[in-house]
Amino acid sequence: MRWLTGTTKNWIAAYKEAYRCLEPGGWIKHIDASGIIYSEDNTINEENAMVQWGKIWQEAGRKSGNPVDLLERNLQEWGMEEAGFIPVSQWPKDEKRKELGQFFYLVYTQDLEGLCQYMFGTVRGWPQEKIAVYLAHLRAELKNMSLHGLIDFRVVYAQKPLDAED
Image (cartoon, rainbow, N blue to C red; front, side):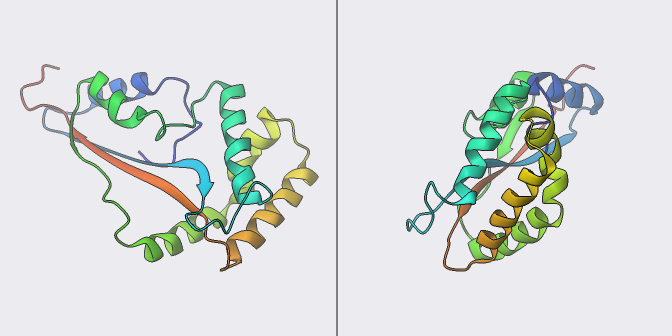
């Protein structure tokens, strides 16, 4: 499971369905990101589209009823445990920040319009023109190497117990 933030109202139900579908000893992996972009060196602030992204994303999540604060609420770990999985590891802390940042930039910017259509357009009611203007600002900031925006990712692995009953 990856990049599903904002797509489901009930994470525990989603994890329970994954648990049900797995054979005993089967594995689940869920990677997702926080919607909050920040900097450790104060190169971005409230005026930046990167910072505004988190607020817009969080509000759209609340309005739609689909949680987007998976990392902040530890929904991945907690939900998997509630479903019956055994957690086995967590994302390592900041080992290859530059390499991951380059990867994130490529993935993130490939389809910003598609990512934003539902949450910004349908849920928030933004017209296409407003989305386009916002995304132009966001893309410009993401290309600006003097702005050091960070976003947290988490990868959670869990295993269905070998002695689990189907």
